Image 1 (cartoon, helix red, strand yellow):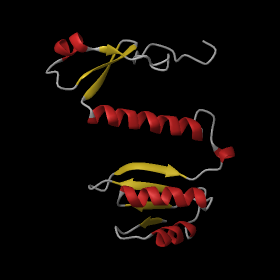
Image 2 (spheres, rainbow, N blue to C red):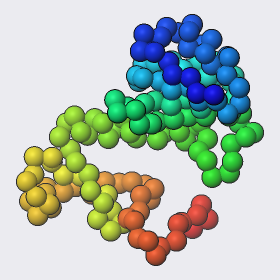
Image 3 (cartoon, rainbow, N blue to C red):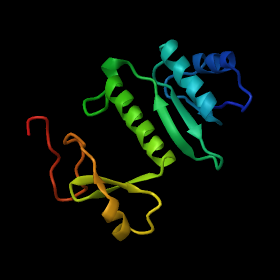
Length: 150
C-alpha cells in the first residue's frame, strides 16, 4: 500500500502513518522536512520493511530509505558509520559549492579549482590536488576495484 503524506502533516500523523504500514508499504513525503521527520521516527519506532520516499516537485522519487535491522543489511551495503561519513562528505561538497570551489576528477586524482574559472584550461593554472587518502580513483571502466588487502 502507498501512503501519500500531505504537506501539512505533523509529527504524530507521520508516526501513526508509519505504524499502520505493513512490510513492503511505501510512504511518500512531499518535503525534505517531512522526509527527515519520517526517517527519525522510522528508527525511533524500530519499523522495518517500510520504504520512505522524498518526492520532488514533479512527483519523482528524489531519495528513499528502507527500514532494516542491522542483521538484514547485506554485505556490500554501507553501515551506519560509513553512511554518516558519506553525509559529512556531502556537506563538505555543499560548502565547496557555497564558497565557489568546483571539483573535477583527472585520471586517478581529484582536483579543486575556483568556480569562477571560465574553462578548464584556465582552471588548470589554479588547480589544487586534493589528498583523498587513497579513497578516490578515476573512473576507468577496465580497472578492477581495489580491495582492503591491496
